[in-house]
Image 1: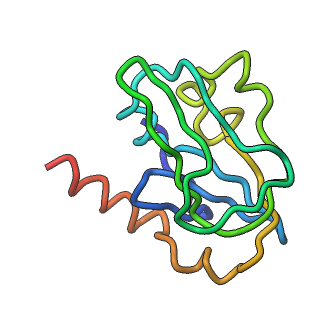
Image 2: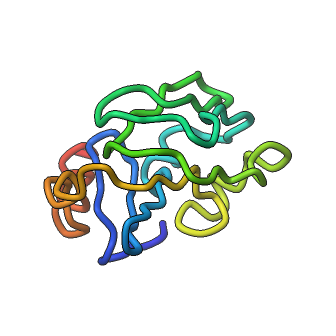
Length: 130
């Protein structure tokens, strides 16, 4: 299991967010990808789509099931990880690297602060494992 990066924020839906200025990258955590199993397809929104915190923005299909992806923050999609079209397994292989999902221009930056830090997220996932 990869260690969760300490400078990222996390959701109870097992998504991570990394902020660089006004842009935030979003992906699935290592714990989340382990729970999904082998990812075989990822559906993402189009560039320019307006996302609102808590809404569904796409889905990820694994050998086990299809799961909706929920937006951890509000903003406009500026980029999607096009590598996932041909290599969705990157979500499993590199959840904090090449397996990122999308980038958004934050419309409400304080939403990020409300998310869990790495220590809180690791405690949350330990509680789930009990």
